[in-house]
Image (cartoon, rainbow, N blue to C red):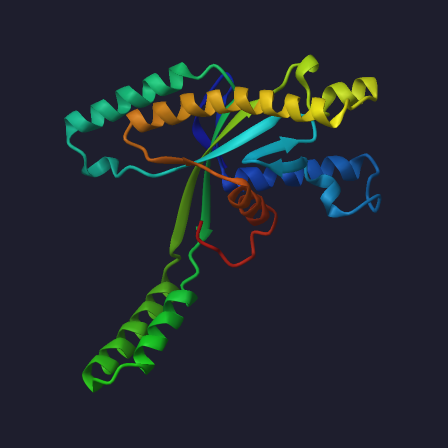
Length: 238
């Protein structure tokens, strides 16, 4: 499902939208007769993830920033106006491709239940043991009746290298040459530097709006994309 704001190169998407895009990509490949031509990995548009940067098959560099939420309703009217003003300035300052992604997942309560069960077994006070058991039953009953969701907020920042500054993407496909390892490494560092400048702009704009941000490293990025392609897997906390 789409989200309610879109301007030029800035888009808002939910996690379901991301999976829908990949489903459409799959249908496109099937319509072109690619069925059985390779593994499902062929449908993943990611070339590699290194040094906190996602490199797409088309040579695009991407960084992902994890952002906190703001309890807007509990703010005073003056604070709300300040947040709106700063966020508006942030949006107007963006001159490059940016996506805001909201990832929703059903919260896995079992690790918490298992922790309570272990506490109950080690409890020597009979009254506390009874209260712990009743609390466990309450938590189980509540989560069976209601879907407890967890939401993560991400900002995806993109950078498309120029043809002359490509690290093995578009330029190498046009010329058939990849250059030396040293040239590729230098090109990668230059492109990453350009991407980090954009990341800095986004981080400063969100921080002024009262939002806490952190750039994801290689391990976190790998986990994020693994979740997208394996939505049924048990959640792990970042």
